[in-house]
Image (cartoon, rainbow, N blue to C red):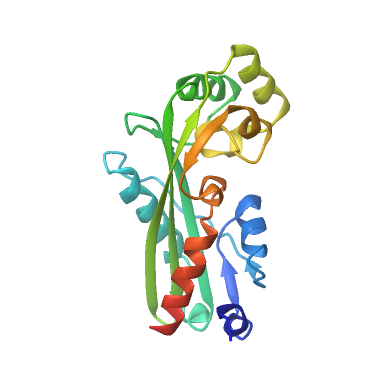
Length: 198
């Protein structure tokens, strides 16, 4: 019996409105429902990227703390991008900021962190996945084209690796491609195996 078979008997809730996370979880052949309560995601930015994504994922999980969710598997996550100096790059406020962020990433390495928290029957498990990404040098016209034709405003780091810019800008990655999209599926699968056996 695979973990997928075992999970067929457990109601699963994904606490995320991200269409990328929803798509990735579906690709694991899991049935789930989506609940996205309002949360305050303001976290001390002096923390490390790993600590920030863990803290935000923990805040998101807190909304599901009532007994209503005790026998449901809750999955929440948060993703952020950090530049080569470790400075956090969240979702841009507008298209000009998105262009500025992409200029900063051009020709350099950056890192994508996703913190995931699982909860089931009073137990909690947390992990953080890191992926390093290297961009080629981008021309301003290429940055402008992406920002004008896609929607970078709902994405940490101002880009989606699965979109046009991912195909022309990413020289290489070290780590999980799915993590850059917002949910490290291979790591999640392994963590679920351990979590539901422990």
